[in-house]
Length: 442
Image 1 (tube, one colour):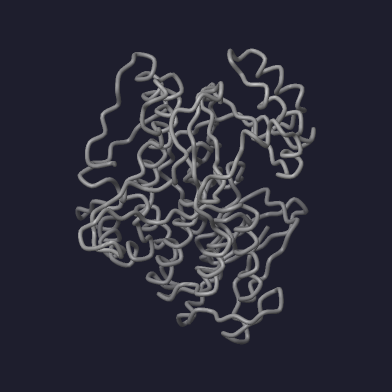
Image 2 (cartoon, helix red, strand yellow):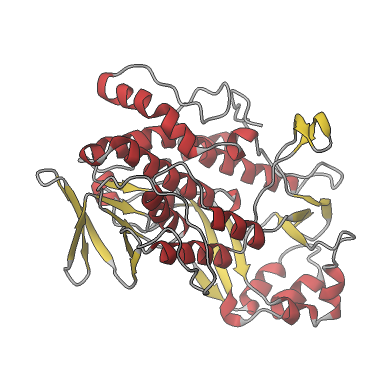
């Protein structure tokens, strides 16, 4: 899918459902033509942010985001269903600050949880409202750039060529852009874990009274998400009978869980192998005219819960860097963006692996322990990628052009970044050596 940027006729445009809405004030156009390949969360938001290029947020999307999001209550269980802890709200660690409950009291930020389809529709509707051109069914086979013409382009499977000042590869882990950014594909390696993923209508499941009894509403009227830990490619569909063969090998596996599996349609269960990939420090082509964002730049374990968030941060950061650089300096914009983002993302990739291990260890721990959410420090959820780009663009640019000192501050406080590899993590796991995290990750 490709997104082409253009100016709508008015700042007051109708929603696709016919209601009115107000767009944020748009900064003066930079004249940069941007082609975005990929229509996921990162690609759609990149299109919107490149259109906006200013400091105002999206007022209507903020309201819609509040409407479609919900607070997630989680209970943590062993693989046989035994409760470890919860249910409790899924929130970041509390910090002392002034709030409605008084001065210097413990406060937590809201974590937005969404149904992915409703969030994707919110972004897609906004893309249509601002007048961005979206073309579907365009399969990119090559990414190329021409330094002499200051253009990048893609080749489609029908040999059609589409060019722009900048091509953004937001087309996920299977992106063809690796050939121009790294010169090779990034291999995926198995973690040894797998999850079965399925979507099942509530009414279809709760018709069984045994299942209904196991998933009651909480006293506050909220529903609770149960996370069972212990057994964990992109992605094979299997029938319930295949999953039941697996659950039959698990000591203490409860009957109601098998009932829930049997109630799931045959084509709705995905055998989802958890894979990991080495952190890749280079997301930009040699000429700076092709840049990767989202999973194309940095894949996360699905259990990390951070992939879409970091794709959105990429979108905001890249658009801000392009505006600061201007049309004549697009290559420097992408390189600065890469510099500002890689270390933060790499820390979060490692954190996803460590949290994954922490949760799996919790599956074998005593059921009275605290809930194994893992690390969710304020450096993660308080970060503003646009503000960070504005504050640090010139510093990072001087570092890249003249070698002046520059240290990223969007990582855990006090942490000095060191490159890491999956093999190092696996070796530490095999030898029982704990990985020590310098700085304040939590």
